[in-house]
Image (cartoon, rainbow, N blue to C red):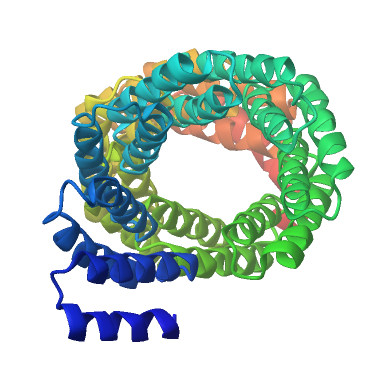
Length: 526
């Protein structure tokens, strides 16, 4: 670096800063900066080199192209993805003016363009770029070349992360084609083939196909362990252990999940250092397991460590917003409502500021904020939060049933306390309909909603209807907890209240006496 700087200084003095030799020196300096991962300095050097190369189109045509592509690479590393996309598109246009074939170079450029677009969540543009990349590679190298397989691997990941309907099946088809190409080229035992197996295992796990996921992970682990000592193999083993942990977690095998995640964490720390993003992901997974085990303090500690690492790598982005949301959830479950509320509001603000389709994430935040205000007795603010969530949900159509159920329940409760019974009943009815469709007639959540409607009818003086809904609730409770349980006693007391209002005092007294016996034999909860 010192030598190049000195050479640049001499050439600038002797030849001026508009000579092609001066531009060569600046270009060489940019290459060193890139090798040292000093992308801002590289970007500045490349701008200067491009300025001069542009004056000598006949002599410096290929160097000008290289400089433009490297400028796009530097912007990509600096996470300025829109500018990176613009530069890569400029480079594609420049290639089109050359008479000779630059097939592989153009294909690689389309690949970089696809990656940059995917970082911006510009999925259609990303897919279009990857398609062009595959087309050019296929024409120049053949449709079964390894480069085609490598690009299809990234396409498979993008398809699945995009999350459209049928994305799992489409992504799996991509990965199967990648494996076919690798096998044809005798690369079925290569590390990249193991990477593909891990991706396939991820999809199987998400679909609940745990046996298939385990089989894929066994194949991957065998390949990674065959290259033990190599960094890529060690990292691959860590990623495989992460997926094994996810399977255990999905099956509620939390101790086994914790062991897998901790083993993965150790590999990442030893191989990649304490501040690598894979370390952050492992810490986050460990925290989530602790949360499921109600070990809240440890869960917050792990997830907070993960968030600090993530912030070293990224400006405020969706992953950081997701991390804030997850920590807030843990704090909420822990009973630390005020701290949770602050983080939910930070996450909401961040979701609103980010590009892309994040409305559902915003609605989830609003729903959780509403539930905290509700628990604190702040009905007005709870209602505002629930209404904001409801407005978003009404505009969405897919995969929102669970969220919408909670929003309707929250709105029903708020309107109930404000004595707007028609609005309350409307939302409780919608909540009940969704619950029946999603979790069935015999869930305790359905029982809770029946009781809410029963209380509402009691307050409206519609006592027969109230008894009908409380009785439906009672039947569910008795199936879950048995007759004579504390839970059934509580429901009987609600029925007794309605009977009292109807002046059916004998039946009311009978239920109250039965309930009193249950409560008085319940021990400490009496």
